[in-house]
Length: 358
Image 1 (cartoon, rainbow, N blue to C red):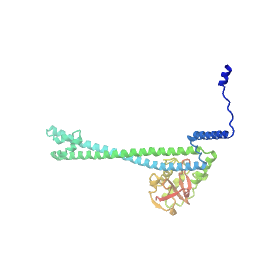
Image 2 (tube, rainbow, N blue to C red):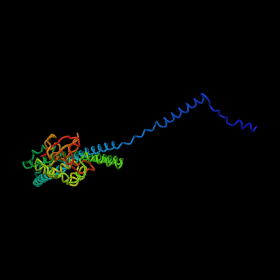
Image 3 (cartoon, helix red, strand yellow):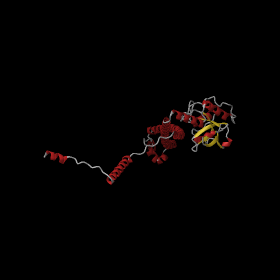
Image 4 (cartoon, helix red, strand yellow):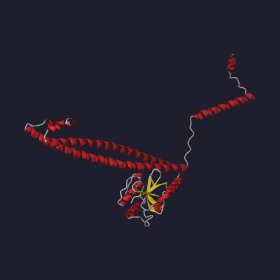
């Protein structure tokens, strides 16, 4: 009986498949494996190939250019914020002066009212003018015709001062709002610049040492770099400037050769592109606006064929870069972060226009 139970629970042997049955089973197994593989890989996106060194260099160049565009917008917003700050301060001073004059007028009226009170002749209109609520006085200004000539003049003066102070305060509020908007722009452009420069550094860090060196050499070549141009004494041959001011501007720019590019800087130890041209012409006694897109309108536009030493030369469709022309197809400019002020050919960037300052 025990042997029978053991044999009843024994697993039956599976006979090997042969012929068409074997082929069918193999086909099903392969199909199942293929299906399983496709399901497993369905949710996984293919990995993006790493950018080539050429692609990295192109992206870095674009980021540097975008950072320079943001820098000029930052410079413009900074200049406008400074103007708005001066306007707010001036309006605050004006409001204080007018308030002082109002207080003087009200004091004079108070003295007159005191004299009238002592003599028992205090007029109701004077009482109204001395009220702590000027609006109530202004609304009921019809009482003016009930006071004497002196009182009439004092009351009109008070009314005029209150009205002027109200206008000054309204203008101050507008300028304060404008200042807040410019400061918000400053923060936005500052963040954009820092982000783009950080992204450029990260991309450069993906290059090998040889690739990085090759990029720097190519960038230097595009912007006129090289050992001789990095030295402040480079290119100091006499320049036939059209006038003494242009000669002074060029002399200043020569003295800046080798100093670092720093966005937002106007010297004396570092410059961005428009900061350099502004400082150079300031040394010649000429005040230029701060940004590339305002400097291009700071003088007479001239064609490229008529360039003379001292002219401002501008590049890119957005007028985002500027240099100081020194003759012979060369300029002095502040190229980009990591590249100091140097001499460069004007045909290495997309030419956008030129302006003769003086």
